[in-house]
Image (cartoon, rainbow, N blue to C red; front, side):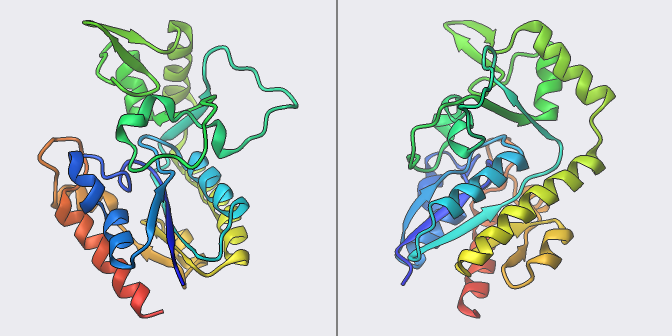
Length: 255
């Protein structure tokens, strides 16, 4: 019997763009209500697939037979790096607890089941480029915050320039997608060895083909275009969340 749901992914499973409605109308919240289960979300806006692979790893390491796991992937144009002043040594573990949640608490769907150390940043390439151009609009992220009426960067200028140069000169979306698929595939295989109580929501055919029994094609970008939220955040509204919920319940009840 399923008593708990753990949801992982980026801003979409957080219900970004819904405001306070996200606590009841986002697709993870709807699913939890429908199957009468407690919801725990480790999803975080702006995170990359490396971070999502750490979420899946956390699910495996904290596996519970009465839990159902929902994993949503993101696009390949996102990066991760250590926060300023952080130097890893042999005492550090590469795990979800190291992900920077600190700058995103206001956007999370539920309380976290652990206390994060906030050493690993993760952000979209487009936001990094906007920030590098001096447009201080990324408030509440790992890039920028508001100090009274003043916008302040969380990253030293030389590091912002380094990220900007990397994206413009070295980042390749095809190679990054291949890396992301490999990372996610490895952790999903580990999860699949533990349980069949999980689902993958993804637009990527590579993962759909490998995990046919557990994958539901989900075009997050198309849903955002068809059902834009009224806040202009680039996410879909409650109708888009209802589409994912309906697709999930059809799949879930047919298992």
